[in-house]
Image (tube, helix red, strand yellow):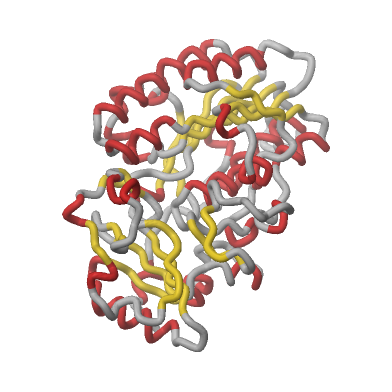
Length: 385
């Protein structure tokens, strides 16, 4: 058994449980299945702001007065705190153990390591890799029009086919244009609409410059102005929800840890997955995961929490995975602590230059906002367990 403090992490709700309920609850507001005394709504907009962690937002809330005026609270995102896993949880209403995209870079049984955001070549049947149907497909079956608004660059591709199936995609390349497109859709009352509005500018600025940078604040201010205009335009019987996939932590270059600087630390590791704040170590056959985890933990000390795949699954951090999904997870999981990030000497320069990171289990990475407006009373939307 490795360091058991990993299993004693105090969180307000299990990883991703309430985040997984956001889109199904939004759909239930439209279908009349929302059993908390609320009549069916005409439209619901779910804005997902990539990288807008609760603590990041609270530290800069003076730059986002419209958003700060909304009612809501912090909820926990999924484990690991990474975009592919969390966005898929939002759009399918299932945890990573069910949908299968259990990290940033994970092992495909035939194709080797694959980045879940972009490396879909050779995966013709996307539902064999992302296993869960989407909430948009459920909406169509219920007679609700489903719409996604995002960048034109995201309109096609494997991840889009895997997690946005069933929705009509509207492309707009600025925050303002995406909110304007949502306003246009809301003006049509001929049919009920579930609108998923994706904003990724803050995440991009955070990775490049850090969430404490002027660039990140500028994007937050842009978002706030556009959100204010959208909120002013909400028709009657329309709900608005804002959430995020993860928060972000700035990592100084002096806190980079080069794992292969120790020539023996990665002995027996055949592949390194995950990302700098959450690494998956895939081992050679017959090598003991517990022994490797113990060795790595001893070498890294309080800079990391190290556990075996079996320990993390037993702790239910992914939600119960099927055997095929469990095989995608590293045999050993290395979770950065403090402000550290783990690299290897062959790492791409673009990754090494990133300031903002996520993937780990700090409050700053895992807590995200759940804010509501319009015709949704926030205390009834997703009650605390």
